Picture: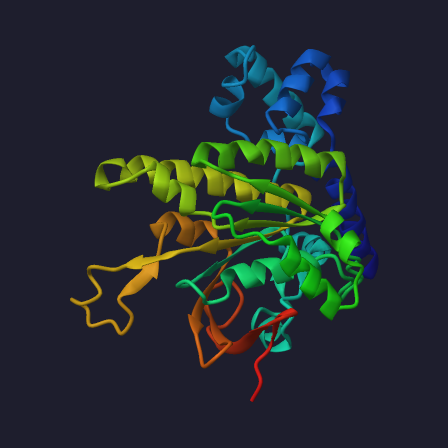
Length: 340
């Protein structure tokens, strides 16, 4: 039995190496020319898994890609990558590659099962001053530190849509952990997004960066994911289009997280809920984004204010974490455990 299990593990690891992270350059050996491979990379599709994750419609939108060419590329990928079905045992073995990044607070880490996990999207929502941006900055430093189960730390990409990123904040958090300030700041790649289209276009660059430096980047932060969509699409007349664009962005985010084994942390805003008074809800507010964000995020954390610098985090939705709460505090050195 042990030999059979070991064979499954070995096969699984081989599949990960040969299928999930296989470079699109291998297509050249199957009749796909170099120019077309370059076009795939320019579109942010750098791996065989990336092609499998892309629809024919998206591939056809690449300049110079006819339906026949897309069909040929898809056919080649189906031959050189795994068929898609795995046993639960194999999935369990694949999940051993997942790592967790600490929040800086032991109580909050305990709530999250050890921190935010890779190959997943963790969303934190709440009103202003509930700690969303402070969590984002703390993660930028914590992601660079070695953690449990052999996690060695890595670089971070920070997408700023609300002009809230402050390098000096990273310095004070780095000092708390006795880390070199310059090295910490040098390991965070920053981009300011100005429109929802720009935010989506940055995903091509991000995918290319993850591909160029495989295993180097460990975290992608977007603060906040919804702000620019609320600006670019206003009123009920544009709501359907906004949700469609948001769904496309979240789908791309999910694929990048899985394709490159990256932890994704996004923040979200709150809005008044007109129907709350009819159902006698205690809190007449709800997270923005509706069902699109609700279904796309793996774990959702609701944040609210406590006494003084204390904040309360609650598991709002998760596939494997129980509904519970934890109290943490915001300090000069980032997120810490709450003081009694």
